[in-house]
Image (tube, rainbow, N blue to C red; front, side, top):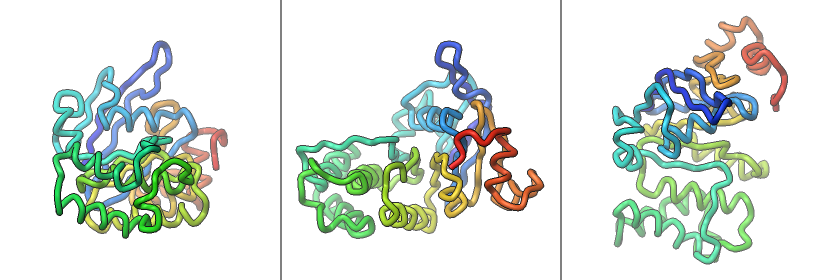
Length: 243
């Protein structure tokens, strides 16, 4: 479970995150929805310990992201925006390297890699060097290495960015599977259709603040609108960034 309370993070005079609070539960998919520059990625980066917050708090499975960073990192799997992979290594070697960093080895690690290759449909390129991979293949490798240690909490920063239709559909099925297995899934997006198709909970962020938070039905009720797109526009007070 992920708990965020009054989180704030500034860069100079820019308030990237300005008092964000929400909870993401196990066995549910929570989406951070907002236009570009709203503060979604900054919030995620605080959660996966890349940034320290200026104030407020964030906990993952009751561990403080600022003071218990090692415990937090063990309990999360992260797919960053435009995640890079080692091009001189094969897909398998990329995933194995991260598994070993998490203390996995031997038959257990081999079984885990083979399992991920199967569910992510990587079998046809798992032993190819990563140089020349398509964006979809690179994303699958990055996701596999994020999941190799079977983390309870999965953080995804715009995971479908740059993917074609079939790759996007496949990734959505993986995210749904993670939910069904009881994981806490939190991902950022500025794509309304993506959030509407996947999320049990939606946190709409605008100008670094939570503009609306709840289930899709609750968001509709709060806004008085008939569809999520109109509810989103009303919440952020602008059509800028709407996809």
